[in-house]
Image 1 (tube, rainbow, N blue to C red):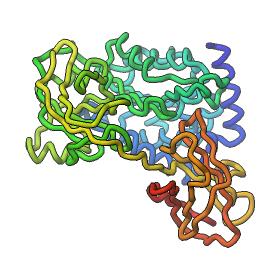
Image 2 (cartoon, rainbow, N blue to C red; image 1 turned 90 degrees about the vertical axis):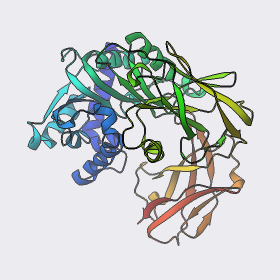
Image 3 (cartoon, one colour; image 1 turned 30 degrees about the horizontal axis):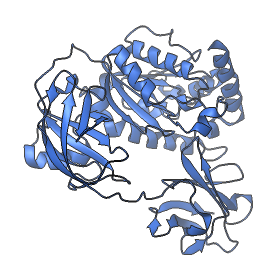
Image 4 (cartoon, rainbow, N blue to C red; image 1 turned 60 degrees about the vertical axis):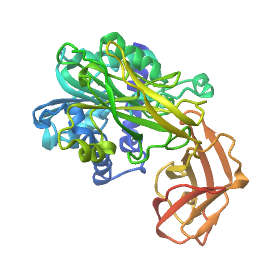
Length: 451
């Protein structure tokens, strides 16, 4: 592990000296401070502020100590310091830390920046932090054992009642697993390993989203008190995860996810490792067990009033092979028995809607797009395309122009497709939108600018 850690130090020091901001956030080369920091603000809003009550356990954020693993040059650290009492940012690259200290010198009283060895957190005492965040870092670590060491150490320095939110690559495609890993295209650390770790340390696994993708997000909570078990749960509401008002659940497609709301069990006693949703004879482990989320909050308040503390939200994905029809659904919680069954209608599969994840120029993989020149040839990253999507069936619509792609390739390391296209010389400049059209399916609009 130490040899791998030295490789990480060497490579990320070199990247930091070359262009730290581009390697941290591939918007474009030589980003300004304002551009760089704005991308950090967007990510902190989405990853932290949007989930703040869940991440803080209802405590006042301004009283908590936060640790950011893989802070780089401080892109997110600056904004985290505006939320928490104190933020410690760590990175394996000494050059990244040097640049972060220079950039954040004005808030040095709120931020502590440290270089680590990349393997452990020996710099810190046990239970030193109330919240730990790691975003877009472990996906670049070339060894699952090094990732596991960091996760164990993060758990050690997390205080009781604290939450550890982190992202790993959970890609399980055979082509990706066979490929050699390095300090850019890192190792897989997937759902099975995360669930195993949570069981081993007694963590409350609140959520694990994005299994089998490059962006698998995990929420672990260190319980502050012994678990108190209760009686059987009751299903009091259910619906599609993406739309609480829709009660018929498709067995495949974008909306193939079921959320049930439980009353009865103490919320701290249940988690994604102890809760199973039984669909007839099939049992599916939960991927979220926690407070009522924004997707079901309005519906629950309409029926239960302002206090939602007595309810627990449970989410699952629909397993392959389920047959449409009315299925008896019940929830089983280890140590607390089963709920009474609830009949739910599962309907025919719906198609997956393609989605554009990013549009980049092929000259430097940046987000700058020009009407002519080397930055007018584009890579469009597309999610939810079936493997083997036919190039002659696809169109790329940019503004009012309908274009045919030059190439489509599946990227197993990202679990998405790359569509290559050349902008025509007479393409209009300015703000525009792009869509991927495949047969009768069209992706949502993706806004970008052509200069």
